[in-house]
Length: 113
Image (cartoon, rainbow, N blue to C red; front, side, top):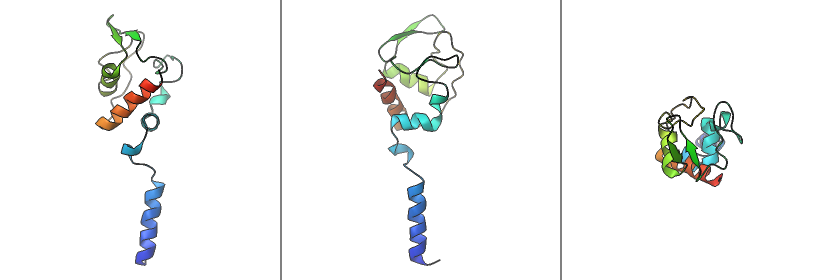
């Protein structure tokens, strides 16, 4: 293959790969890792909604109450078994995410109110 043709193929494959993980928005990260399979616009049997929860208090299975803020959402993403919302089982998997991806997910949840 000629050098020019090889360069065109590399550029094409790079363009088709889409944005890198560090370029994705919080919503795109959520889509990529599958958050919306369980977290929908309303509460479901699988998971509570993420819409309209920022700043509210939620009861945990332990009976404690926690405010949905940056700390809580970050902890829930990094260690999903740490603070399970009352009425739900600890089904959320642990994801391998960068600090930046976690930050963007937290900001996305904040944007949902």
